[in-house]
Amino acid sequence: YKGDDWAGAGVAELDEALGGWLSQLRARGDITGQAHEVLIFPTFENVPARFVAVVGLGERAELDVHGVRLAAGRLLRKASAYKLQSLGSSLFGSDLPGISKEALAQAFVEGAALATYRFAGYAQATRRSEAAMHTTSSFAASDVSGEDQKTEGNMKQLWLATAADAGVAEGITRGLVCAEAVHLARDWVNTPGNLLTPAAWCEQVATLAAAEGLKLTVLERADMERLRMGALLAVSQGSDQPPKLMVLQYQGKPSRQDVLAFVGKGVTFDAGGISIKPAANMDEMKMDMAGGAAALAAVWAISRLKLPVNVMAVVPCCENLPSGQALKPGDVITALTGQTIEVLNTDAEGRLILADAVAYAKQLGATHLVDIATLTGAVVVALGKVTTAALTNDERFLQELQAAAAASGEKVWPLPTFAEYREQLRSDIADMKNVGGRPAGTITAGLLIGAFVGDTPWIHLDIAGTAWTEKAGPMGPKGATGVMVRTLVELARRWQGGRAS
Ligand code: BES
Ligand code: MN
Ligand code: ZN
Image (cartoon, rainbow, N blue to C red):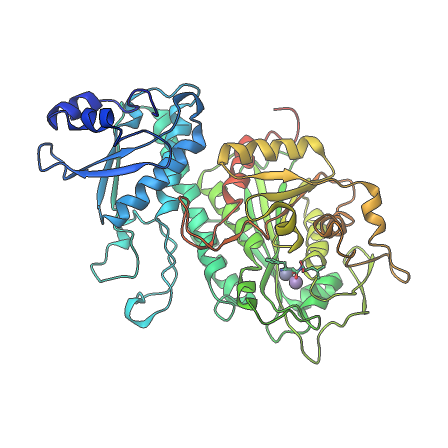
């Protein structure tokens, strides 16, 4: 801790074995204890470890669970740079006021695992023989192949020194499962559009579902035509890749009536369609399926944790490309519900496919909807790359999600849904148009989806600013972040059916 005592147990004994070096460095101000500080010293074999790492936790009174998560992430990043392979923590020997051992263990494991994520990539010299996918945690034995890989993650063992404690064991499991789900989502989002087509993605999810015993249903174009999913079909029609709609279902408590649906945008590449995007950075639009990835990965984790809830991921997948068949500005389309939409900009495609997907989730029995999408550039203007925007028609539902986000260390903030904003979507010739102009672009985009949920409790999450990062941080490298996976899992873990908990 900063200006206070050591947090771990056994530090005095360690200090003594090291000839009092730790306390001397502290007295001289070389060790300060401030958050962000990670120092790694050689022990010169005076203790049975080659290095000792000192991690700053900041002010004792200010430390919360996320502070532990971040500290573990910073520690593991530094340890990876030192190519350390095995690491033990004494943090669990001491009590951190207000933080349960369970939450502490989960946060520590999450921070450690998220920090060491690497996307394997496709360079010939470093490519793995089996596949380019890297869906295991960096600690997994499968990561230890001996060949020189383009990854820094050498960490193979993490030891948490603690008395036998069921809470700690549960926290570790939950942390590992959540981190692996985030890794899975990141892998999908980092995968280029030519390799993660809707069909290729479905195949991967089918493999995962079979291994986990989850029910996966995939709608093909003919099914969408039969169901009259006019909005998803319209966006898909410019691409040669057939559209798919995945439904991944987990029934953790069939006797319950409530069903949570995570409806995720799955545009595997968004060129904008006929309203084509500028060339600069268009490659980044391979990440336009991050909402779908989060929805699927969350259901996978919820199933692995055997949570007593019923959840489904509903993911409409397609490409948004210009072609002779493509949807055109001015076209009027009819969605699954029969509502008509005048498409004035084909680049506002996410809200269209989600309009059909939320309506379909309701047909499948969803009683609570969370849609999650890289929906608008406007959200970056409003909230930057820090915070996920939320809209809702049910304040209590959103409060539950915000509590889950806070526990997960993910930032979510509400935007208003006043009726005046809906006027911006008024069309002269259809029930609505798909764009509401520049003002409040994130709100009008979300409200278009909201026009298809009826009275069902609903939250919309716009992750266009948070799903991808240009700079590496304590929670992972640049690229896909896997944002909201852990929040959705935590929401399900706390889920009481939308009634008071
Ligand atoms: N996928 C984009 C939004 C996006 C922007 C995601 C930046 C990630 C980073 C979405 O389909 C889109 O193109 N939105 C348009 C809407 C506009 C035409 C009303 C936008 O934000 O420019
Ligand atoms: Mn678009
Ligand atoms: Zn898009």
